[in-house]
Each structure stands twice: as C-alpha cells, then as structure tokens.
Length: 238
Image 1 (tube, helix red, strand yellow):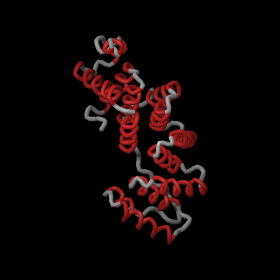
Image 2 (cartoon, helix red, strand yellow):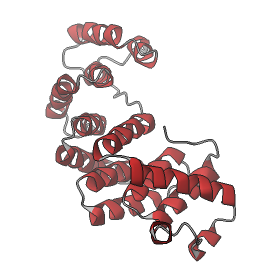
Image 3 (tube, helix red, strand yellow):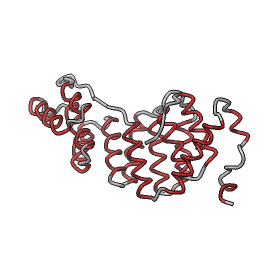
Image 4 (cartoon, rainbow, N blue to C red):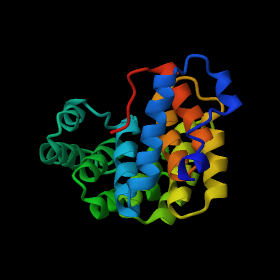
C-alpha cells in the first residue's frame, strides 16, 4: 500500500547512523515529507520553495572603494522599509553612479518588494559592469525563480557556483530548481553535493530535506532532516 511504498512502517538501516534521531523526530520528519509530497500542488510547492529560499538567503553587500554602503540603507531593508531603502540607495547612486554596492542594495529591496522585473534590470546592470559579482547572480537567480523562470534561475545559480564552488547552499538551491523542472537526476546530484559536507547550515539541510521529500526520496529526506536537527533542533521550515 501507500505507506509501505513510502517506508512508513519500517525504518531503513541507514537511519541507525543517526542515533540522535529519536522516534518522535522520525515521525515529525515523515509528517512533513508526506504533507509536502502528497498535499502540495505544483504551484503551492513552488511557493513553499520560494519562502524557503528567502529564509535561507544571505544578505550580500558588495564593497566599493568609492562608495561603501553606509549601513543606513541596509538598516532600512532589515526593518522592511523597502520604499525608503530604495530612495536611500538612489541617493547614493546619484553621488556615485558607477558604484555597485548601492545598486545591489536597490536590487535587493526591489526583489523583496516582489518587483522582480525591476530587480532583474538592476542585477543586469551590475553583472554588465562586473561579471564576477556573485551576489548579483545569486539575487537574479532568486528573482527568476520567483517568476518561475526556472531555467534562467539554474543558469544564474550555475554562474554563482563557478565563482564560489564551495558554497553548499547554492547546490541545494539549484537542485531544488532542477527538481521543479522534473530533472530528478540533476536535482539529486546537486542535493547530494550540497549536503554531503554540510555541518553548519541547518536551513540548507532542511531545504534539501523538503526537496528530497517532494521527489519522494523519503530515506534521503529523513537523513537530511536528521542532520539538520543535529545542528539546530529548533530549525523548522515555514
């Protein structure tokens, strides 16, 4: 039956490698995986993925000798005053038109306002000026993912990975995009590469656990969540 297919009635021997994973934790993981894989529509699964990308996303600030980010505009973003942040960054850009830091901050504020097309335009300008701007590829990938342009998101995550190949989180996020497009082989390769050496980023492991669950890879999902909870027992996906 369905539960036998999902392995709910038996615990694979591989789980014995995680003695910290109690039965209650296993049950918690199974509930999450089953809920994600059996009840989420493709659209809501994508929405959940976007929420998790936003939750795991790092705040990037590109240093500039001519116009360092004063911090005032960044604090407006952190307090979710995005309109004011955009005005703040535009003021810095008027003083230093070629500076990348304020343009990156403006792009981030636009993206957080869900003004994805405008954000992508700003990221494009940054990348045109500096093809090594990993932060811009990362931000543009998130904007493209939000627009459900998954191939472009994959391309940008790939560009960011070429600049930062040790970034485990980027592999997890690109793997999630491959999963949405139905390329499970590529998704699993990225998820495994992104989590095999992960020891600090609990949310990256949680994201991988959800992606594995949506791909009906329950054993791998439970392993990801077990490692996630070992790092941070309070971690939970929205």
